[in-house]
Length: 331
Image 1 (cartoon, rainbow, N blue to C red):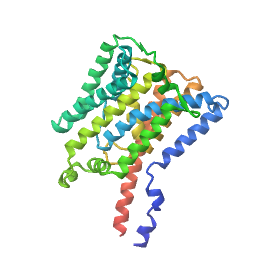
Image 2 (image 1 turned 180 degrees about the horizontal axis):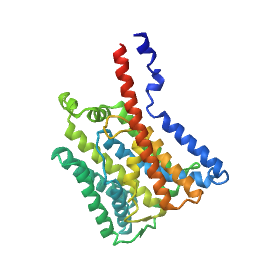
Image 3 (image 1 turned 90 degrees about the vertical axis):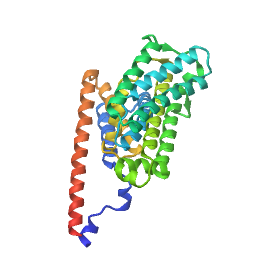
């Protein structure tokens, strides 16, 4: 009995599931800071890094919820493109910025509602459904924008992506606020506990009386909402909406969540981990860009790092399961 208790981690460490990612991000900062000391830690690069990370973090918030219930949302990137285009078109047609933003967010929520209903209620495969809505939203973005980037001449719209409160960009503050609110929901509310329970075991959740179908629909609506927000913010950064702006974000959002400590099995992960995962991806991209690495090789290196981290995470989980079995045996 003494041996088993001795092997347990102190409670302070049990609360954090991704300390390795933090040290990995710190190591990358040090590495690129040493390789490019005059440019990597420069204020312009740090501001650029924070803004790019903020967009990915917002997109990955909804993906975190989807993966926590052991599913994914492939439509995130396309919803970003479509919502950004919708907001730009509405402003161009004379609607107030607030109305344009709300309208674009509602489009994302509607896509999420469709995804969630087809997946949770009608039991369609989530890969097929979200892949289908990805194609629909990507096509609609191109149709609505007529295949071109839509410029937006509006000071309020531009301020969201380029304005500052103190020395920090508004969009970074927005990302911090959204992460804080959604993490509180995950950790302190019944809804958050239900999300973890569904991801841990859907069958046990059903037996416990948790409305699994309704909560899965909510998860996809949340994913659509945050994808739309990310698309709008991406458009505000350049005061223009591109119909293909969000193409790469579905993969990057999934990668950020998985790197941050979540698993495709569901029931494990946190938004703090997602933030670190998104930061790691953006630090790698920024550092490689400053080193003059070609964009094609950057994609290869980032993809390789993602796969490597996933493999390490799987091996680490297997080791922990073996250790748990040994502890039970000792007890």
